[in-house]
Length: 132
Image (cartoon, rainbow, N blue to C red; front, side, top):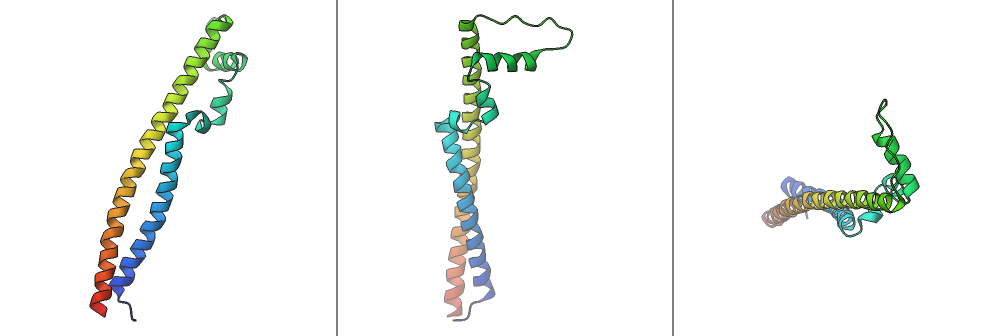
């Protein structure tokens, strides 16, 4: 059976939309993982700096020290632990927010992709029917 140019075009677009759908689906799945398990997806460098008070304090001193200013005294262990845990909770919250934003973007892409696929699939079927 001979295919028309219109059918070939429509099927080519369908192929590309399937590829885009698979890629967007993979990214969306990772975004869901970011929302559900942010401590797993957070950057390893960020994760490491919140695991112990010593590592957190050394990083905080380096991040917030301004030359010429008096260095901040290290708080007591309970205070430092509370500060570190609060900072880590903010990092995890940011990770979840980033995941939610990426998920919404990918859901929009998936929706557009599905519409483009459906339209071109119908176009290919019509072109095939017209050629027959």
